[in-house]
Length: 169
Image (cartoon, rainbow, N blue to C red; front, side, top):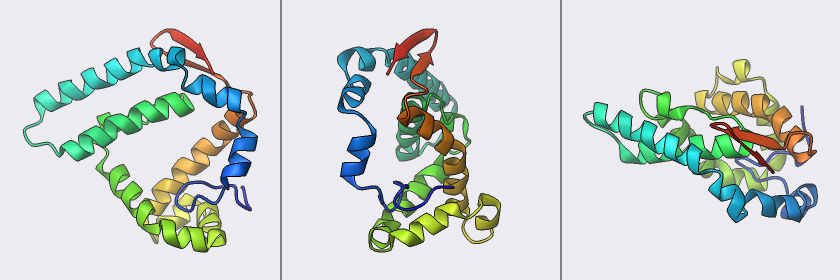
């Protein structure tokens, strides 16, 4: 699928220089300009309202999971144009939080053995599930999102829509 320093998740194998070269500075500035951030307001408000609605119905809530979930939903919608809908999960995306924590633990190994992380990412998710459910989840997500990430980096996909508003990246 993609090799040689192309992945960035657990091992951060892409160097800062190559990442900067791929995403033009002007484009990065547009992502976080005042105008772009203000256009996120409907997305943030909708996500917060959804979280509040869920909190009212649940008796005991792990707020760490709840706040991580809302963050994941907002960031995924903004960066990839697709919300991960973690707020709809019964345990507020607890599996994603555990997976991310596991990825952080794996980071030192990934930085030393970049080829290992690349190899793990290339294993088909259905095969990886036999060994690690978290890694299978990462692989599934990576395989689904990688084509979209490549289109965004190539400038072929640059419009996001949040609740009827359109913003150009």
